[in-house]
Image (cartoon, rainbow, N blue to C red; front, side, top):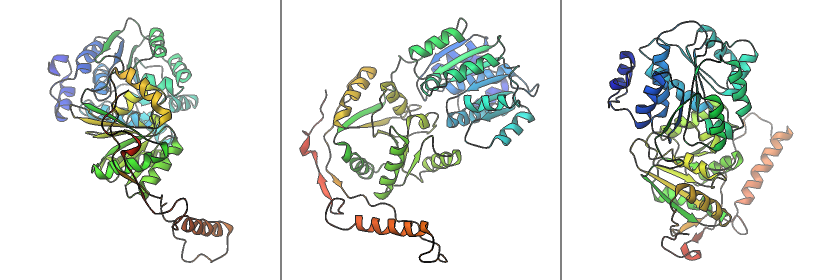
Length: 435
């Protein structure tokens, strides 16, 4: 089937051709006609299947041409990155329509977003919190919304947005078209769908919670304190140029990025405590190969659009096994192959078994390669301004003391010595092992 057979307007077909696409994906083949026909949709498709275009294209066609200033279509997303990605997709596909696309999310100034809304908006992409902020200030009119899409609805519930979503829904006209798109669906999501959707078309282009078949899964069992050393070895020895690494916490992401930098690997962390500009800069550097390792938390990773990402590492296994599916869904997109590596501490063995039950396949343990366990060398302190007095402000004395402490920590002998030890597979039998 071609995009023309989906019933898309000439301007949208031209934009699709501009992007080099000629054949719709499975989710697009089913979702686009359903939404063009006015049906509500409940769609489940794994990351990288083209689901964003699956709802953006029919929304643009239903809007047809610019009208009043207030938005007539609303897309809710859980994160800033995903909101920006959806808005960019809408602008690219709507470039020949004249439709006005606006995006609003937290972490940036309000005024530019207010100005954009006042200039006119046909399709609005938003995160729930910022949307409600602007509505509370009286600068957002939702009375004309005829189409609502919840993207990554499962993640929105995971992040505690259920009450915000219900508030948004109460602000919208009762008569409207609704669609829910997600990689996976929990029972809570299906309960929300039962209340929100009217006689929906159910679309499931992949079995629930499955992952791309082209992903190679492998696990290494080792003590928690050795993980960063093995990771550095895998990146260097394998000549990895781009790897997305997952931690459970924001603090853990910051610490690991610093440790990898200390090992000579260009790294950056991305998580909810980072400013929007810092997150955008880290992602741009990663895409441009100026950064080799991007260390992320699960929430921050949603919406990351990284083409041909070859390696994903679970530095810490997720507590929820379905999150493993989301993590490794960043690789093996659009027909490419991918490599998913899990570093498993002894107390995480149960988490891996839970993941295997979701995958319906074992994740084999591989023999540990020989790798160095080197002392951590923190980045050198920033130089003090040349004109600063030698012993003036307490903050300066504190910084100098910290620098001397770092110097002592790097001296040979004792714990933290620069003398490297070799860690081999002697603690674990060589060869792949399964549970």
